Image (cartoon, rainbow, N blue to C red; front, side, top):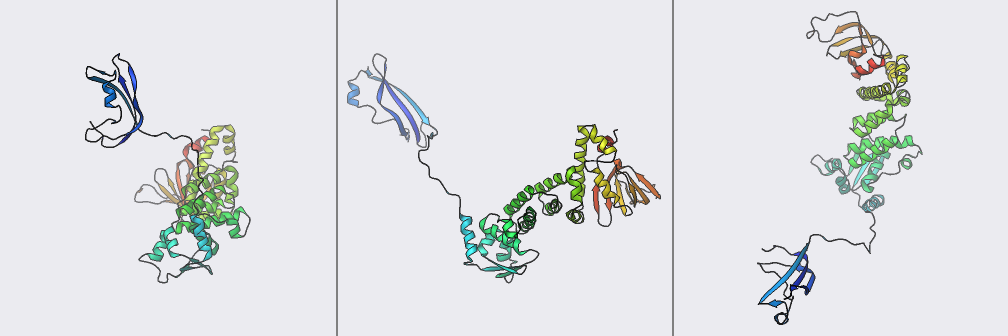
Length: 394
């Protein structure tokens, strides 16, 4: 038997004398065992002349006791010497290249300001710039590119990240020492990062916005998260808004009006979060139930009740959980989201020919799936059945 490759071994050879006692030979320790073509052994183990006159040879026989251990891995002792390694400075070098302005070969015109850059650097960092500068659909004038729908400070921050691989000081960039200004810049920069395919910058902006969630900016941040598919940021914003102490204040901001107009379907998810908090509060103790029954609804239902009250007089479509859709003018809604409609009619008469139009219709909130407000198409999913039954103490 032979091995195809060399291995590190530890071996000890013992010779047995004529009195059957083992004595150490003069060859032991670590060796490189190279086995080729069936040959093995250690050629300098014992001199033949000395062996023939020794007690180890009896009746022309020699007994050798061999113990071999193969070292599979080496052990590391304590490091006596260590050389400290500095962090990568490639970002600093590229940043200094941008600041020096040397070798620039492309100019961007943004909101009345111009910025210079290097095509190769920008193409390496952004797939959008790569296509814009070197792709088959590249701009005809690739030396001067006009950037639409972006403010100059935002593009400056974008360039800073692409060269330095780090965010600039947002407060210094905006000239305002406030979290509101930094959050606003992070919002714009997140949209720019998504536009140019800068995933790392997008995540950095998400992290900043998650840390600076506030009453006056959370609604616009929520709309931004929905539009740019930032699911972690969206979840943080929904949880923040759904808190009883935050919901009323957020609904009074201009950002909430923007949220309703730009992402009305997010209200559905927001109401689901409010419902979960309601369910938790009801399970905690009797005080939560009494709060809902007397209309105070500390967990937010009353606020959505107020929202629906503002829609009185508008035409709405109410879809029930049995898929029946009824359209009519919203006459009233109570604190349990029970709805009264006037001049009602079934939306799909062919599907429900037996359903006749009636002048007035009362719909219990427990059977409502959602309410749609044409023509904007705002869908607001109502609270779960269990929540309403528990709220009534049933």
